[in-house]
Image (cartoon, rainbow, N blue to C red; front, side, top):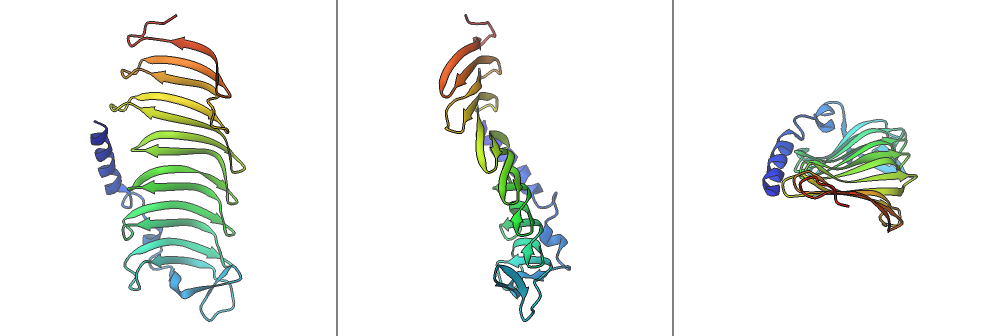
Length: 216
């Protein structure tokens, strides 16, 4: 069942990936330069034979003929600035999407695997910040609360083959169970809620059997 769900999700994702979200390299086609015409000097990008840091849009290609797009974005006074995208499969799939501000990643970051999102979060001046979410076959597999680039808490999810959630476990930054972790029966019925502190069980809040009957 899990394989069928995965294949179905993958088919939809691959067919919609670029078409439903027009890529920058398509939008920039007539309003950009080929990045092969740029050179770097002291950390800034210049067009060949110019002395002014480059400002404008660019597309990077895998081949010399400009058929297979690898990246697209823009520079402001020689530094990456604004939306940025990377591609795979000769521009048919997104690899990741992000943004830049004065040369540093800034704003929403989305990473893709096999054509669908595998991770997303926010960066502020090059540093991870806030909630980050990981996905596997379209389901949330983990969530991280990040502050100044450091993980504060991690919530991990697991699922049964039928797609029903099996566990939701909360960890501290030492990878110890910390907080309330929840487990479920395969029919969706709550199985248990247990509170942990630094890896040690504080209390069993509630427990139920497969039919929803409370266990002492």
